[in-house]
Image 1 (cartoon, rainbow over the protein chains, first blue to last red):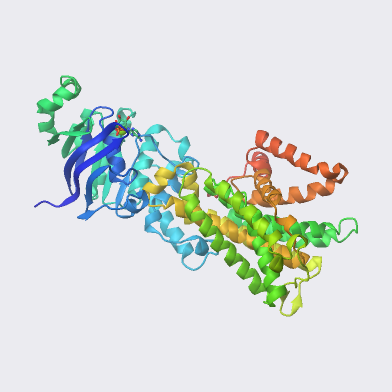
Image 2 (cartoon, chains in turn yellow, green):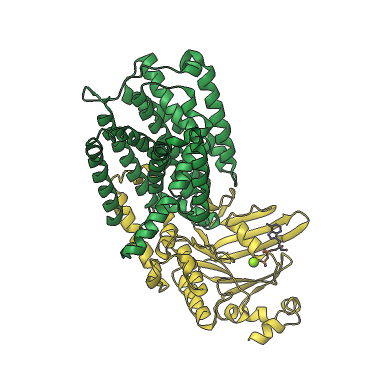
Length: 260
Length: 325
Ligand SMILES: Nc1ncnc2c1ncn2[C@@H]1O[C@H](COP(=O)(O)OP(=O)(O)O)[C@@H](O)[C@H]1O
Ligand SMILES: [Mg+2]
């Protein structure tokens, strides 16, 4: 048996009349990059929102590290070791780049209001630790030169890198990236891909939502295709490219074939 | 606290220490020592609301109630039960914190401005209790003979000595607030202000972070109220009505949201203005309204934002470390 970090069973999300995710089941092997693809509105973001506790499933189960996720509070799921980025960038835009990552270290520190207010023993040390950790993660994405700038003023490519670095600062074992390469130019997507590979290199399992098939085919270990919220195909990038169901869903295969 | 903030706080402390000596030089200005005591008290309650409003993005319309709880707890415990004033002050802070927790947990879990509604209602209830529970509160006419606070057997009664006590408290509160803002819990709050989704995804309990800062604002309110009671030695309900809650809100907004220093500037302005606008008689409320409007329209960062911006423009000083105050 391979080591599985996540298992999703019959997961369903219904919004009023619409079934956004429909009895979806899959499992995720530890340490790989699994891409989640599917047309717009297929339910990818909804799936991520359920796994990360931003939405509660209508039905079905999510099992993370052999434990059933019962509570649906995002902050508790984060504490269990799942980090994420957002399709529409969610930076703390009035805080500096460094501070963004310092907030990312929240789970690796513990000082609360009263000890902070009166600088009780240990606060200074912890603040230094947070700062050091944040610098380390900042350097991992080469954003040192933006350290003191407001995150909202960074170019789009850097914002996406910052969001990934911030998520990594929480020291997760699983990270879900919702379209981290979308809207980036050639050089920027190259950097983002390297970052994603380096995340896997650190032993963190990745779920990657991406539209650019070139990116998907290059860096994924496995691909899961969903359509209308339903499981459509799953397998290695090469198998997926040849899968007739997938080719159908992508308008006669143009999207996949053309990019290769 | 970084060197920049520490420098600001220590310069301010020196200014505060010297001020009464200067004011006492002339009989025309000696009275301002008393006004400055209210600036200190209002700075304390303002700092609390500033943390809540500027950093958690939540409005409380019931700060007067916490102020009143601090004042009445001090008054009732010392006068009716002979409790030591310092202990009574601590009790008031504790009661206010407990009530803030009870109000905050159900309302701050919801998105939106439910806290504003809940605190408005809470303020009204407390105001009614002060008026109606005559046996304990003395009803509409209140009660007096509240003993002063004392240090090592010396009662702190004169304006001069109470000035130093109230400003000691205010500077501690200001420093504590700046420390909160510039450390883990403060960063968590500021992050929530920008994106509560991202904050939650990083493990921050968004609702609890707001509850905690609301409790701090309640505690600061009660501390201010207790100082008020021991200084005036008398309490009655009108000092704790909804208009006082609105005044605290004005102090924070006019002074400058997004910086706890703003509360100090706002408190100074709203206490000195009536002194300078006595010729307007009861129309000074109109002046507040106009100032509030001007600030919101032309300097959303308040007086402090305006001054800090001007200072930055003239000195263009380079900050090594970005510090948030
Ligand atoms: N909060 C919501 N309320 C109602 N419908 C939603 C909500 N979120 C997503 N949907 C709908 O669910 C479907 C799947 O959306 P989404 O998960 O964002 O797709 P994808 O990320 O694959 O593009 C879409 O039809 C979308 O309109
Ligand atoms: Mg999406």
